[in-house]
Image (cartoon, rainbow, N blue to C red; front, side, top):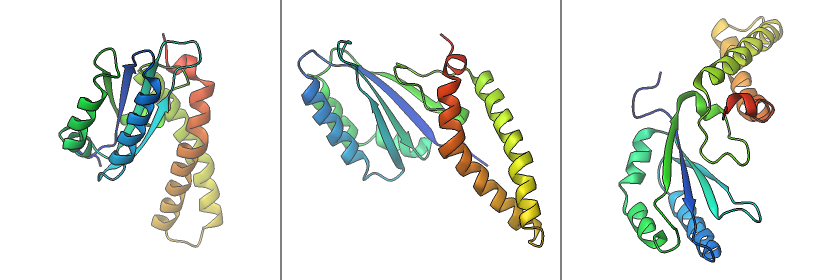
Amino acid sequence: MSTPGNEPVTVVVTRRVRPGCEAAYEAWLDRLIQDASAMPGYVGAKIQRPQAGEAPVYTSIFRFDSTATLQAFEGSELRRRALRQVSDLVEADAVWSRLTGLEMWFTPPAGTVVPQPSRLRMAIVMIAVVYALVLSIGQLVATVLAPAPPPVRLLVTIVIEVFLMTYVLMPRLTRWLARWIYPR
């Protein structure tokens, strides 16, 4: 069970880079990601770069294993130094959004500036996926591992379902249902 402070969190940061500073900004961003990767609780980052001909707006998606480790990063000297270094490269302050809970399963479609998926629609998709997986994988594991104790069968079922959701189903469903999950 999650308690406040230990649930995974994603931070989406959108910055408008000064024209002509894109290469310097990307070098700064690479250094920040490399330095942050050494911090406890840092899970990873994904960068959405502007398309050719678009305004130089970058969306950076940083993941931390808990809100406590995100808070540690936010209060760190690394972040203070990085913010000082980037100030001359950007036109304005960054726009920050924190995402916790169900939206962690949903990767925003390319071009989404600040992903704010509909919580109700995320819940509906998650319920449908979990229901289908529990019925299908649960039955399959119960049949194949019939002699195993129920806790072992349950563990195997959960492991298979979480990996399928994380690496196979949710990334594809998010792309296929993007217009519905991310209403305008």
